[in-house]
Image (tube, rainbow over all chains, first blue to last red; front, top):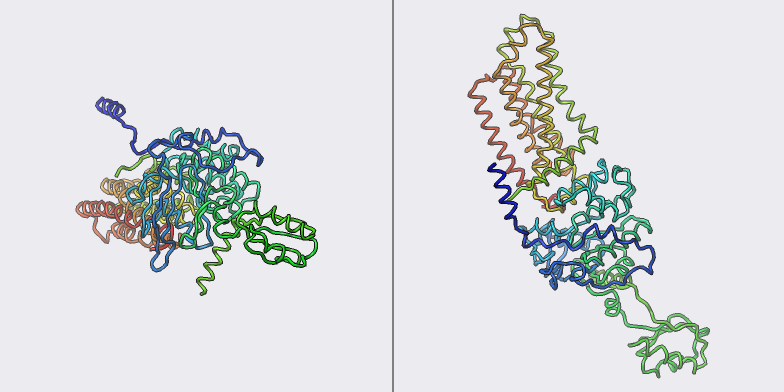
Length: 373
Length: 240
């Protein structure tokens, strides 16, 4: 009787956790979301407003991740240092860098698996300290590069274990929804050891979604996947973004980062650059026009030097020219008119496009040259 | 610090499911009890009734205390290093689980089957002696103090083996090395119980109480030492 009274009193008094905001996204809505199969259905990358996706009021305006001069050393070896950035709720943030650059160590540090040796951070609104480890890990999910599944157990047994570890309510229901979200509902009873690498990766993703995380760390989520499976993962990331989940995406696939990420950072022990992919291109490469003619111009200097919109030019190939310009929209018509006036047979005039890969390679090359020098 | 029963239960259940699916673990759990059951059973069943006087001064039953010393060691030795080798440790440690919860779950998953096996083997041995041994052997062999010691020391020895096993497992990088070290670490307990069974160490009430108190202290210390040995960062990165 006494126990019953105590239980009733405790139940009545039980407060709502003041620092535990509601989850930003539920796998229920995720599973219910229509699967997009074509590029036309894809939404452009943009920040999702906190209000719309139900991000808690306390966290509105505050960054999902805030990192200040963070660093980690293992004895004499520096894994990464002086890393600073902020990521908003609902942002997909790409973290790029060569092997050994410190990407995974950064993820582990922000995921409270290892302690930083310098700097500070807040993760999902909570300061990164050893005492806050449990509270932070409640609000985030980490999907490591290796799925790390119990291969002898079935898919649903794997997820049931993690549902207990995250203390999620309605375990069976939540597992079903997470599996539907990654299109694996029909494989729930299969042993993980019998699944292909791509399917294991999807189970790991379902596991990461179980707790409805506010911040999701994905370490090489499409590593080893075929193009169709990789596209499914991309679609899922898009869906999560639209529902306000902050995604910290570590990847080697630059086209993946370019397609999915609102902003990217390139790490090579220190943070080399950060920004939107288009900003990085503009920052690193001068804007240029590529001109191709049928036959080489007799006096190209005479044609291009007189154009005010063209800052300079050089040969690309015998009948190809690269013009340095400030504004391609102004320079292209002017150059066309000048070429026609000079009697040139113009094959094409186009703006040079630098990919994120060009940016990445340029920065990594700079680092390699600096280390040689 | 509050321990979440659900998270402890999550690890415990997962371990039991893994045992069920892993034939090697079942074999490891069964092989030691068989070794320590068959030899005394054969001895006792082939004894003539006249040997009961001699048996009354021995403690053959205590041989079987080797089972709770060895079985959990085999299970605990794999508990952390095995997860590390499979690559499953990082996803588990990335959840809100505290190290104490993780260790309790692992310890319980080794403790419960070990206890069940030890008591089952003891019950089987007693039943065989009562049913098939010559008359007079059973009363000489199955003495109240010995049975009581068997019942009480089984959990104490199992707990000690488990904490030592998990501590070794948390500091090892190879499951085979961890297994061998755990068996080595169990040998002192097996040696002491064997010497008592052979009457080389006289079994007295004082010795029993002292031994129980010592094991209780060691079990408490083992829990603390194992918690301290469990370094999340070292386990993930392999450094420190």
